[in-house]
Image (cartoon, rainbow, N blue to C red):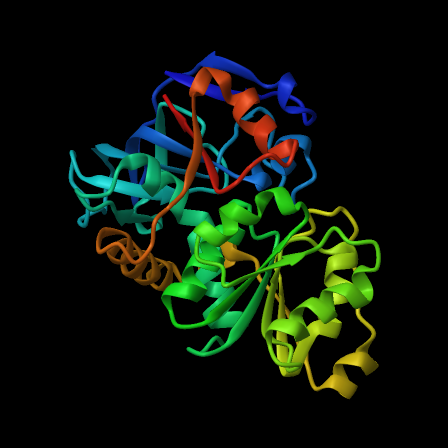
Amino acid sequence: MKAVRVSEFGPVEDARLEDIPVPTPGDGQIVVEARAIGVNFADLLVMAGKYQVKPPLPFTAGKELAGVVSAVGPGVSRWSVGDRVMGQVEYGAFAEYVAVGADQCSPVPEAMPFEKAAAMGIAYQTGWFALFDRGDFKPGDTVLVNGASGGVGLATVQLVRALGGTALAGVTSMSKADAVLAAGAHHVIDLSGEDLRNGLRDQVYAVTDGKGCDICVDMVGGDAFDASLRALAWCGRLVVVGFAAGRIPEVRANYLLVKNIAVTGLQWSDYRDRTPERVADAQERMSAMVVDGTLDVPVMETFPLARFADALGVLADRRVVGKVVMVP
């Protein structure tokens, strides 16, 4: 089978599409014949050796896929050959066949295309747990989503809207304003201004009657993070998801005290590994929302697996709006 193999940490262009054996499922595993593969910003970091988990070299890249069960390992009773599933792995998804823990998979409804299922897992799961588990989201809350045009950002915007909140979409380029509004954002917040420290707060105050946002889900870091702290309402919560801007910010504890605010972090893969039953429950709820039309998973572009470098390049160049998917 074909797989994207990384022999040395470095740029995406150093990886190669190689022939390797089809995996055999171990205890508690299934093998999924991939019909669609999700592409995430974290894949770039893993391949470069800059992610918190460094796979042993050589390895197959990729974190999520959707497809059909082709083999079932010992101890697996939930899945059968032919079942439609989506699954997440720490690495190994950029391949035609992938061995996945049976408890790391969720059913794909017949009405959901595999491309949408592959685009949905990590992005929507991250948004779900950022809102509910770390952000204590309640219907009626106003949520600022920084990096709103990316996969996790658009997913979070959609969830806020669908679940009864007000979504403020923070974008680093106003050229992406139409896309975030189409995804359900109530207002667009421009993160590209020169005086972001005051400008972000002014924009948020203008659309919240001076209250500020109840929650900020931040994928950007850097100056956007610093400014977002100032835009939080009393008892507001900021959820750290990533640092797309490059700079990892620091927080002065006295500011948290004075404003009575909280900063929390989200590492979604811990939920995958520690509480897979909660991940499965959240995924089935969101899949049902896709089927009934409450959510619509935006797939920006689909690439063949052989063009993995082009697919990842869309993310590296910050040209993504929604999700990029590969098809074997």
